[in-house]
Length: 377
Image 1 (cartoon, rainbow, N blue to C red):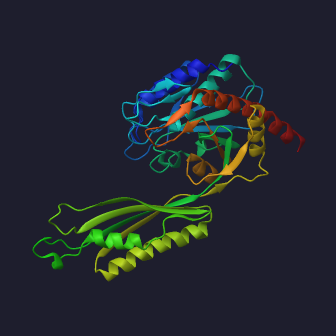
Image 2 (image 1 turned 180 degrees about the horizontal axis):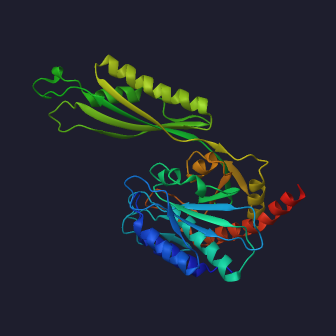
Image 3 (image 1 turned 45 degrees about the horizontal axis):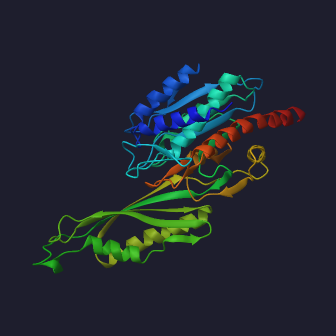
């Protein structure tokens, strides 16, 4: 039986442990202890450059079932401001004190997975073999998942607990490119010889003003999110760094959008005689789990059994599921209740975390139907 108060205690404990990207050592240490107490043998797999620790993995043998093997995942890192989080429970929700994020993205998912494991162990429930993968450095580019060894990504299906609405089943996500442009102008005294300078910030501003941003179409988005440059108001700035991104479910559209951004920077820099250094990186590839895939039908059935109407939809965001799908593991994203994520008003409903746990346990029961269908083939 799901222990709601234990689930809440676990979540509060987790969010109190600071774990910004690349600094997940303390939360990994805590989870290792919890998993070992449940009779598991957790291990680290895939170290990220400049990271304190690698991804945490634990295998749970199947009980009454040898197949399918399920990979279940959540990430451990949080965005800023995420230090000294103080969780407060009120009105059925857990929130922060308003000075930080809460960390429900993705510690609500971590808490749900831990409660699922505890119920399976305590009640000796029938379940397929599980591989639990708690990843690091997800928020800064899915680097933890990318670093996982191929042998860890051996599973028939995957479930990433990184969604919000608990009735949501995300089967489709976009590809993303990141773009960094460093524009080099020429420094000069802003009050005495401004005509001798080339203002790198102005060049960047002109280029940005010519670009298309926001929602380009129903499948494509684009954004400039970071601008860094300048030393003092009396110096013509000779360097500025601009960082942006583009995403799309259609790779051809994505390439066109990235080319538009590149050409705009190139033409503008040429016009103002500024030098340009461009770096364009593919962050992750799109995925789409086929509607006919057994995993989708089983996930929808689990949501229905929990008394909810399944909402099978696509997303505009990326997650570890992108990496797992690219590795050949059909993976959907399911919700753990996190709401208003990446803001200081982030929250999670206690009832949603408990219901999410119920849905995952039910989904594991639904795996019997996959096993039965395999025998008939």
